[in-house]
Structures are given as structure tokens and as C-alpha cells.
Image 1 (cartoon, rainbow, N blue to C red):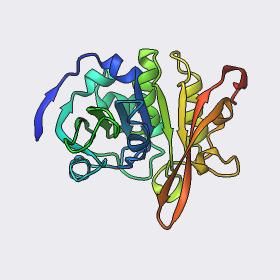
Image 2 (image 1 turned 90 degrees about the vertical axis):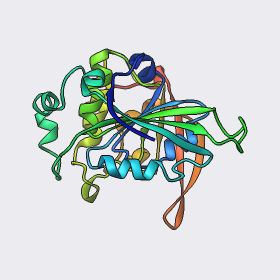
Image 3 (image 1 turned 30 degrees about the vertical axis):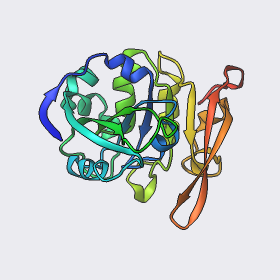
Image 4 (image 1 turned 135 degrees about the horizontal axis):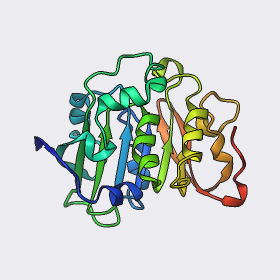
Length: 241
């Protein structure tokens, strides 16, 4: 079921504080599949996904064992405290880096229910995912930094540098936004090999401040890759240029 009427979410801060924030997410369900037992709210941000693409994908067995029950439009003001046009102006330096046009921005909230033939061992009864069609760093700053809060976890997987549609310098700029957030750093990071390898363009400098607590394996194309789940260690935190 899809509702077209805009909704203003109640308890937005609570939703955000306990969420997994996934910049440059595309329609990748990896963070949900791996972390849904620990986190039940997710905030995805990607400027290159249309509302139609999102709806079609999440309604087709996007996360095994769960069905998407509803998709509601969310008013930009309720999440950002301003309009998309104001974001384009306030974050012009980021928006103009994008290699593709940013058109038809939107925010939707999708709610998922566990299927009756799956038990609680599979995961929680339900979870919610908000998708924002917006540049990722702008989203982070206008949501978390503005409210002076942080998410429970940040997923940093294949940020799409180069042909993927992201701009060079994204990792350092995103790390700076995380570090300068008045709400503090997220307690957890979920990241792939590209994000954790200092020889790669996707490397996120902040990762050295986190200690790996769990490793997941996932199939990617024709090979297996490993996703790391790490917890912030204040004593390991070093200054980021």
C-alpha cells in the first residue's frame, strides 16, 4: 500500500538517534539484513534514486522474511527543518560537485513487517526505513548536525567514487562532518574493504578510531567480501585533518 498524502513524523529525534545512517546507499539492503536485530530504524540517502525505483525495489522481497506494508511521503520540513531548495542553496558547494543532475527530491518512510512464517529468531516484528533523495553529506549535516545528535551506526559501503556518481574528496569531507557533529561520533560503523583500506580512494579516515567487533561475509557479484562492524573507542580517536 502506498499513501501519497504527506506525513509529519512524530518522535523524529528518537527515530534518528537509534538509526543506521547509510550515505550513498543506492538500494542496497545489506545494512538492514546484517543489523536489523540491533537497529529497527534506518535512514538512507542517495540523490540518484527515483521514488519509482525505490517503491518497486522494496516491495519485491527486498529483505528476506519481511514485507513492505506501507510507504508514506515525509515532508522535508519535518526532517530538515527547511525545504529542499534551501538545502540546495546552503550546501551549494556540495551539490555542484555532483556529476548528475539532482532532480525531483523526495523523502519516504517505508514500514516493514516480519512474515508470519518467520519466527522472532529471524528478527524483530517490524522495522522502518526512511529514504532521502538528497546528497549524503548535506543530509547528514541538515539532520544530525543541525539537531546536535548522532545516529546509532553509520554504514559506509561502496560510496560510488568515480563512475558511481560520487565526487573525489567525499570520504575526507564526510569524515570531517562526522567529526564536527555537535552530537558526537556514532557508536558503531559498518564498512566494507574499500572503506577500510587506506590505499583505496573510498577510505574513511575515521575508521582508525573504531575497533572491529564482528565480521560478516556477503556475496558480491562473483566473489565473497567481508563487512566489518566496529565500535568507537575514544582512546583511539585522533585528529582528522
